[in-house]
Image (cartoon, rainbow, N blue to C red):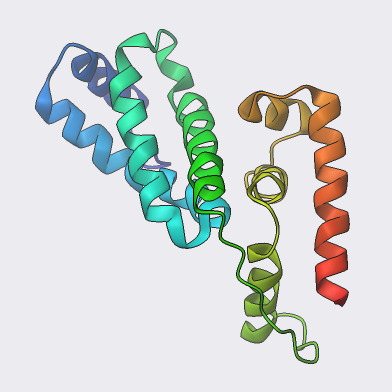
Length: 170
């Protein structure tokens, strides 16, 4: 659960939710919603709320299938990333933005420009960059989340970085 959650309590919530306890489901929803939102936002962009909702629905529809309770967050991450990609592809939104001159490192303008470039990448490229650079997963773990081979994840990461560089200098 979150860094503040007591793991035995989290396990009790999952077990109780698997047994149909509505209060435990509510507590899990409260705990998972911010995490799922952070995962979906950089991938699904404007459709992130829809992606997060779809991911949370999938989590709760499949919660009874979760056998390894300690793997909750990895399992949720996999579902959220997959749903974010699916929703982003369905929306097929690519919002071009004009880049002005480069702002100073650390400035708010730089963060906005980086976000503009990321917004123009494909959902698959945003997903691999988010998993590697934000979540800190290695290529093997990112490949598992995306349900692709390690070689595919490595080449997708390379293409994503190249696409980012190309958009950045455009």
